[in-house]
Image (cartoon, rainbow, N blue to C red; front, side):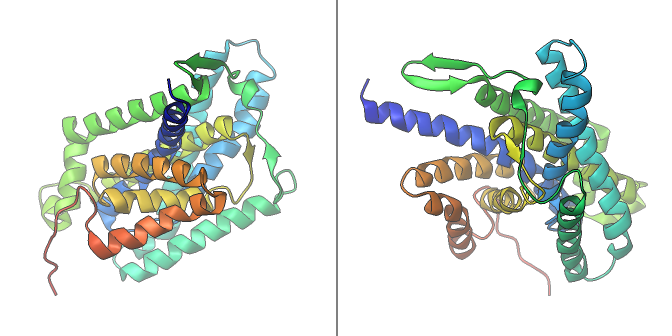
Length: 308
């Protein structure tokens, strides 16, 4: 097999793995926007909290002090990270966003930026965390295993990232399309007033939306921790912004669009990084500008007339 072809396939695999992490964050963005038209810029910090929840509780209390099988430890870590992300998302909604529900959208948007900065500085000020990087003991969660398939280097972390992301995306698709709560979520996203007249509890649906989005961001933090094993309180800033770009690229408010946009963005970033690392960091924002200019509704979105 030609070496350049193998190299391109290697980049493709790495891009899909990175896109899987972005997809889990982007799904939370797109769900919240679809329900209450809020761009929740604190969503990247839910991802950060998911990683720290495993650093302290998952590793030290499960892996280091018990003789559990690594797969069992990993599954418990998934549950803990999802619970941590869901808890902070629900608290942010109840404390910061709910009081502004019927205020101008700009108020909620500015509040989201405030929540994000508060969480980052709160964590960096804690004496047992601090602003510096901490080494995430990924081998304690699940040991790394390398594979060589057709000249392409793979590892179990890449497989886990893609597998977890695909499973959770499939679950969310089924939940939204196949359950009564999911149908209620779709109804609320279309018309809140009509949904309320039909007896749907709007606040309950919004809480469930934040819970699911926060849980997905939390597990994304776990996957990022085992794949790129260092964490710090500001680790959610760039991934959060890039996941937002992914949601816009696919069509914000559209679940399949968030998935598609995240995978495309992950692949683009990895290929751009192979030319220049700084170009890789900035490619997402170049894509955002191009999308807003040429297709603001996103790849899977449709043009809609806005009432004025």
